[in-house]
Length: 408
Ligand code: PEP
Ligand code: CO
Image (cartoon, protein in one colour):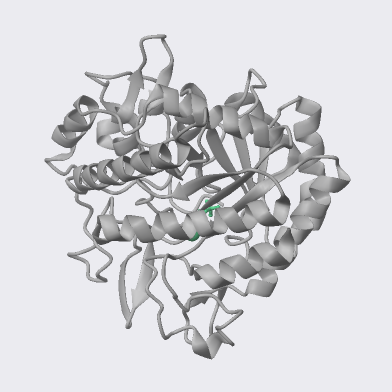
């Protein structure tokens, strides 16, 4: 699984002058941008350590309480959005479209399940991408693989793919605007209620030169990751002795962790012990992404290990990331049938072990894209018409509705 060599970035080796230090500053980290000693890096980290966090402690507490409800079987979680956010798509109109698709899917899941649904976007910070290969070939030219708008542009030239640390400030500004919109939406929906159904923000906490300076110590002594409500560890960066786990283990936010096909029950037990030592309901969300062919065989042992450890986790099915295939034209795609099969198998394993299938983690676009096969997209020949993702193929809203209807 380690696809790029362990890298500790230069800035990560320097002790934090402001904010909070911690072992994530010196432990090895996979999948970090090769800033190559860029002169702006230290300055950007300083700025990030000074500016206000994007989320507040009371929001974290509300979300944790709602996740605790889902862990206990009384609610569902819908986590969905772009694979990679686009900096150009953070305008009020784009955010309105994204939150309305999320709300539509959340309402659909609520009606199907008969349970309250908490909405969590892959939004307001989902700008960094781990990659299986450090390079990709576009039109016969090999260029560094696209690692998200937090690192560089998607334009496939060596110049445009050069990492630029100033992008971290652009990501912060765009994420602040998104966070503000979502906060207003929660206030609008939550009037007259004690707790809101979201929408909350989440992203993979990947680029440590961005995440680490955004850790803040609260007045009550807790550490808060100020970049998002619900950060998650990716399947490629969940190593036990690595910086990402140290960081997410130290903060009070609820945290997610992807569980891929290579994870053993022992690995997951150790991850749970590190991320949820207090066995706190609502603290830990396990996001299972095994692939259609593997989930029925691999998941039971993992569920048993987590139960034995006494961790009251939320179980989510990510049926997307274990089911990516290549279409004849070389583009990545996913077949709705495979996604449905994995999500169904996930639920039946959990029910068999008397655990609550807490919900779904999906990649869904806000518009009628043709990136995955199924529903109105009749076959791989039809995927090219509106294929606009910056990274992985997303469902369009109609396909996502169909997926939920077929599974719940
Ligand atoms: C993702 O969610 O976009 C992702 C890269 O997932 P994973 O870490 O599960 O591969
Ligand atoms: Co993805």
